[in-house]
Amino acid sequence: MSDPRRSVILTGASRGIGHATVKRFSDEGWQIITCSRDPVPEHCKRDPNWTSHIPTDLTDPVDVDRFVGEAMELLGETPLNALVNNAAVSPKTDFQERLGCLNGPLDDWREVFQLNLFTPLVLARGFAAALARAGKQDETEPNAGGGAAIVNITSIAGHAIHPFAGSAYSTSKAALSALTREMAVEFAELNVRVNAVAPGEIETEMIGDEYEPLVNRIPMRRMGTANEVAATVFQLCNPDFGYVTGTEIFVTGGQHLY
Image (cartoon, rainbow, N blue to C red; front, top):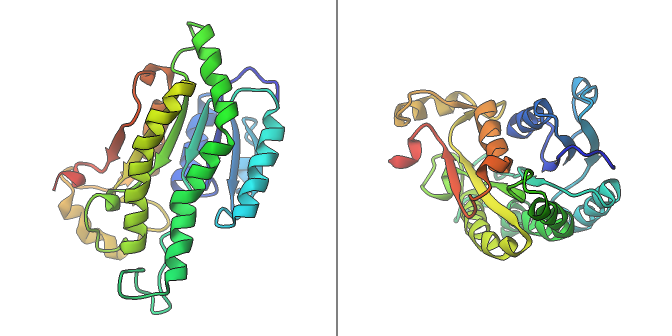
């Protein structure tokens, strides 16, 4: 890859918020490398900006290392302008209950934390050199600006009790919020900004009828869209937000205010 366009790596790209985010970056002309457990839809393969998709099991540390290696080979010496840690899991127990403090095996908790917390950390470490190249480039090119960016997708559930999220998911997202703040300080030395986006109730294929009563708890009286989350992620990677780091933006329609 020697393309002068800005580049982004995004996890969990095959559906929902991840898929909408890929489309937003593509519409803006960015070069895109993605991974997910699932293959991408056929119509997305025709996107000229969607350079590469690498099927990866992000719960498997060995597979994560493989993904980093393959993506770094694709990048070569090209700077990486943004990393979006979107992939996450919110599992149910064998009894179809959300994974909580009193149910489900601890191994399931470990799997949740592996994907929702440790994988973003490993990816940030793995791509630090490529992100630093973009940060250094922006230091020497005044019109580029903003440095590189990491955006972690957290959740409203990491800040308040949520009826459907489950304790394992909620605490993993709270930990990711804390990790975002810590990373912002350490990665600033590389001219890499680190922020988070915390979605609330977003209309995706994962939303069922049970979510409808939650609309009454949203000041804007509607669910959000994946495109609205994607737009927020994109802006955090935009040079216009070049002095923003260590921030978590709530895309909740005001639900987090209660």
